[in-house]
Each structure stands twice: as C-alpha cells, then as structure tokens.
Image 1 (cartoon, rainbow, N blue to C red):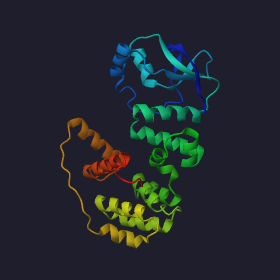
Image 2: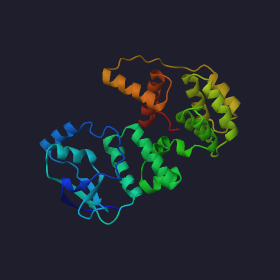
Image 3: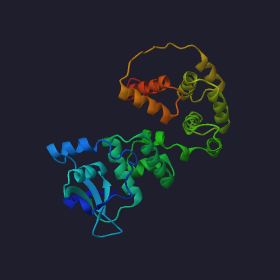
Image 4: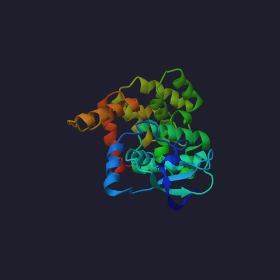
Amino acid sequence: MKEIRRHQLIPTDAIVIDRFQVRKANTAVGVDELAQSIKGYGLLQPIVVVKYESDPHKWELVAGQRRLLAHKLLKRKEIMAGIIEGKLTLEEGLAISGNENVFQLGMIRPDLVDLCEELFNRYGTVKAVVQRTMLPYPLVKKHVRYSRLSPFLKKMVDNKQIEVDLAMKTQDAASVSGTFKEAEAKTLIKVLTESDDKLRKRILEVRNANPTAPLEKVIRKAEEPVKTLKVTTTLGPSQADALRRYTEEEGIGDTNAAAGDLIEDALSTKGYLANE
C-alpha cells in the first residue's frame, strides 16, 4: 500500500476530483459547517493527493473532497496536502479514500455498497478485498451484495422475485456450515418470503446459532414462542427521517423491524451480544 511521504501546500485550483472519490451522494452536505470550523481552527487534517496522470501540472485528489470544497468556499488559494509519490492504481486510491470515509466521515450506505461492490469485482473475494485495502471484514461482507450472490440467487434478483438484501441474507444463512447449500437456500427463500419480518429475523438468528442443525429443526425452533421486550420511544423529526431512509435502503418491511436491527447491531458492537 502506498504511503504519504511528505506534506506541502497545493493550489486549490490545481487539484482535480476524478477517479478516487467513493462518496458520490450528498458531497456538499455539511461543507458550510466544515468551512466555518476550518476558518476558526484551521485545517486539522490535510487532504491526500497524487500527481494527475492526465496533466503533470495538476494533482488528483485521493481523499478530502469536503475539505477541498470547504477551502474553495472560503476562497482560499492553497490547502495543505499529504503527497503520495509515484503512480496510484484505481484500487489503491479507492482503498485509501474508502478507509478515510469509513473511519472518519461516516459514508452513507449507497456509497459503501458501490465501493465494496467495485473492490469485490476487482479482487474476487471478500478476504482479498480486506487484505488489499485493510477495510474491516464485517463491513466489506455486509456491503458486497449482488456481486457475491450465487448464480441461482442472482437470477432470482434479476427476475425481481426477491430483493438483493433478502438474497444476501439467504445466502449467508445457507453458508453458515462453511459451504453454500443451494437446496437449503431454495427452501429458505420460500420460507422467508412467506414469513413476516419478525419470524424471518428469528429464522436467520437460529440458523446462524445452529449451523449444523437440519433446516426443518431450525424453522420449528424459530416458530417457538420467545421471551421478548417491547420498547416504546419517541423520535425527533431528524431521527425519524433517518430511520425511514434506513428502512427503505435496507429493504426492511417496516420501521419497527428496522429499529430492532439497529438495536441489535448496537448491542453487538458494544459487546453485549455475541458476533454472528
């Protein structure tokens, strides 16, 4: 992986935004606030650039699009940049840009999906993507969707029989033993599409917890009554809008199920639930 070897001030009008930007949507969101922060405290983290192959007099932006836009908004002529020497391949640039956005700027889900899909198509496996880019394995696996589906599930998605999200969850559930089982996936698809969100989630949970159990036993176990806790809360306008967008982008049936997913993810991240 290429590293930054030095820093220098670069004219803002000599920087080109081209190949390496993984953030495609809402690139201007928060730029006004970032500009005010830079005005008050200075640039806390330099951008990253490499020589632009199409024009040796210019630089290509690798990471720091919003910081560059903020500088231009402030009409600043120069910006401090970390310099990567030599040429940078598309894969290397995407890896650097993706790492920064994932760990520092909070990319939105569609951008993460696009990035992980592109890297997966280039490297062939989730493991190879992680080794070459150092992005977290769970994140890459979660956001590589259509590309890593089996031909059978891809065909169902292409024919609009199921959504990509359900196809991905089905494939993961049918692979918990270490090998993808197409016959099990076919049965799971039928059962999951006929189940409501609550039962669907429970079936997947039980399958992940019991990778060697017969599928029929898993389904029976999932259908058994379980102890639950009902949580009622009131969200503000921005939180409610965010939850609705998450529900839509994830292809989840309703906001209650989506909220349950988010709570589960948070508990798992904090260590209160065992990672699946």
